[in-house]
Amino acid sequence: MRTYLYIPVLFMLFCTACSNILDKEPLGRLDADNYFKTAQDAIQGVNAAYQPLLMNNSNNNFYWTFGTLASDEALAGGDGSRPGIIQIDIMKHNASTQEINDFWKLNYAGIVQANTVISKTPNVDADEDLKSRIIGEALFLRSYYHFILVQVFGDIPLILEIQNPDEVLVKRTPKTEVLEQVASDCALAALMLPVSYGGNDIGRVTKGAALALAAKAQLYLKDYNSVLSSVAAIKGLGIYALQEDYRNNFYDSTQNNSESVWEIQHSNLELGVGNQLNQWWLSKKVQDGYGFAEVSMSFVNAFEANDPRLKFTVARHNEPYFGVTYKASFSSTGASPRKYLQNANEVSQKSDGGINYTAIRYAEVLLWEAEALAELGRTSEALTPLEEVRARARAQATDPTTALPEITTTDQQELIDVVRHERQVELGFEMHRFFDLVRWGIAANVVDGFVPNKNEVFPIPQTELDLNPNLSQNTGY
Image 1: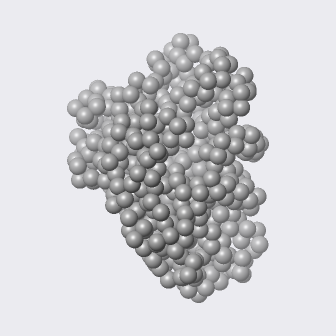
Image 2: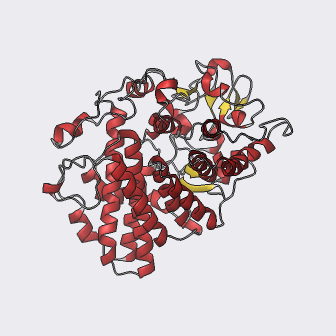
Image 3: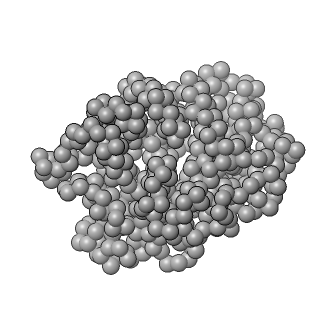
């Protein structure tokens, strides 16, 4: 979907006054009461609720810092100009780290906007089906913002309606309750949303995206039977399939494809709505690159022999690299990521990349299924979705007859470990790794500097603690 990208002024109307959820007048109520009258008002309102998703420079959305740099996938690199990124990379962050503060504010702004849409759309003079769809979109977006906040902070304030001044100083809600709310709201949203869109509406939240976020929340809750039910519903839609070419998920020309379940849209329009990773992750030895993500050797070594996903994910010595030849000197580790990057001739400015972020793709849905089945002891069944993912990769190997042999073990722990490994190599640099390590309880084993019972979550921003006496800090910070 491209329509929401053109309305930063509308987003500011609702959310400039919402950038700090714990220090404001009635959040969004005055503007919303004056504004929400017509169907177009409601559409523009929900369009604005998509705005915080963008990984652009104006949002300062550093979700990737938590999901990727905090993990064993990458080192911070860069030029030292962003101390917060380095702090997160080496597990020395604190409640004043800028990227942590920005992430909290950005996502609560999205929650406020979504709540405004949910509250005001029923009273709009518009077709009932359209209103239902818009509310479904907003329910999903509110759920998504809450979900990623839980990933980063653990227990968080659960905000489900527009706040009055006497309601703003709220306590944190246990993360299990937030995840249960996410799963419930997404199940409801799925009933209100279409299976697909056409034209300029491509990229809006779909029924499959809502079912998938419900499944992901259920996975985090370890409710594996519900995960399987949600995955079955996703498959039952009959529209998702793996792309033959793994790389199609990361080309500008092949986005929103059959493998895309939930894809955050970017555009290279020199309007600040492009993907900043095109600059932040590009080696600083290449013109306009910042180099703030260098591939760890432990990630490189995690790949099986002749797994083509390694060269599709990572650039190494003497390989083609976005218009130049990559050299080992391009990073301190001798390797850099490829995903979300483009050749210079494909974009008008480096910081405005046109590649979307596919937050959930069908390969991950299959791996959720494999993980849930393995955790339930249904190991023979788990081999089927696991093999589907591996078979796609195998087919792209130089010699498919020897690469990525089919997994046959039915030992439960062995298979759980295999599925976890498959997530690592299939979804590398897609911002899942740190959160996976935490939910599996093994982060301390693989992340340097990780302190158990502390670094599973990041600190609540100090500015929020100062403003709200009902907030409490995470243990160890």
